[in-house]
Amino acid sequence: MAKRRASGEGSIRKRSDGRWEGRYVAGHDAEGKPIRKNVLGKSQAEVKEKLKTALAEAGAVDLNKVDTYTVGAWAEHWYRLYAWPNLRDSTRRSYEGLIRQRVVPVLGDIPLKKLKAQDIQKLYNDMRDHGRIRTGKKSRPGLSASYVRSLHTMLHGCLERAVKERLIVRNPCDDCIPPKLQKTEMQILPQEDIHAYLMEAERRGVLAMFFLELCTGLRKGELVALRWEDLDTEKRTLRVDKQAVSLPGGGVKVTRPKTETSIRTLSVSKEVIRLLEEEHARHPENPYMFPSPVTGGMYYPDAVNRLHENILKSTGLAHIRLHDLRHTAASVMLQNGVDVRTLSAMLGHADAGFTLRTYTHTTPRQLAEAADMMGSLMAQSL
Image (cartoon, rainbow, N blue to C red; front, side, top):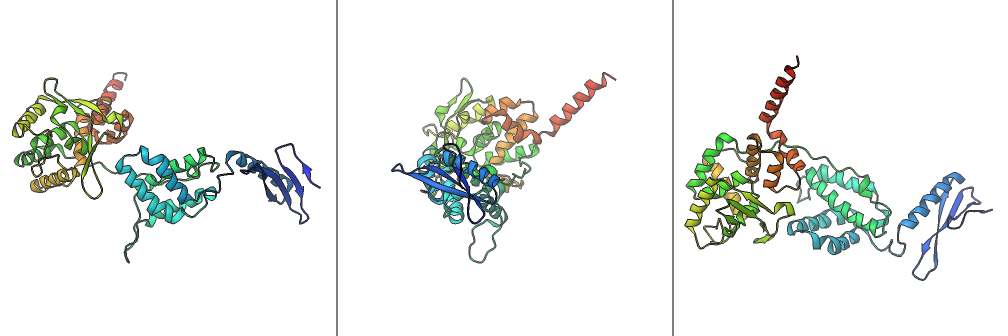
């Protein structure tokens, strides 16, 4: 005989086959008719727990929409409606690739409501171990931790929206463990090599650009987007409020920086002002601070990359990325007493904590000086 529960809590009965069954109304369809479901178990206590969980989940999802989407269909819908309008071009391309190449082939056909953390974790593990797309008979080496974590970030946001729209009860990404980032030693231009680097830059007619880069740590896109109107020679300030971004298939687009903290006004030295004024005299009618000698327009970021690599090659210096000149500037500033908050503002970081985590390990001299200072202070108490 069925054992009645309180209203809204369903009912429990023992079936003729010996199992226990809990029945409940999970919701109502578009016409207002009740949607009835059941749970089974070997004991009454087991069914009570299952019934409790099922009722909680039924209240957390919209049963009229819960069967609408597969994972692939939801990811594409979420991207077009929610993500795309709020992303920069480069992030859009990244998300499109992740959805098309990673999510849809592996998870795409799974009903959204049935997606489990294990499904996602297996995808992460496969990408980490042998995730590169196969080309012919070539092997498939694993993808970097940062790439897998970028998928995790995107997928978490995608599924979090599904929770808010009551399509799923909870976000399965919360139960996944993306790979840890491997901390790599930061590359910088050694201080004893800076002179040779700048002399070669001068020989090539680009001293002002690379001297400014080493003094300020500007991002590559910020550097090439500078215009003369951004410089105030009397106040010795430089306004950074735009950046150049390479487009797929060629071309460059000038946009606002990625974050509001990247929009900043920098103080620059007399030496920087002198070199920039000399640079301006070479092409006074050109609005760009560092115009391309080929096109007369803005230097393409990739062209500056090649120029940097040629400088290194000509001087016989070890290879570092152009972006590592930014790290060089930050490291030199820290090693010469610039405090972290000031450095963070100069680099356009969102918070000083990120600056500290990024650059602390590159200042062993400061750590040694701090140790000596504390030793001296404590020694006075002996």
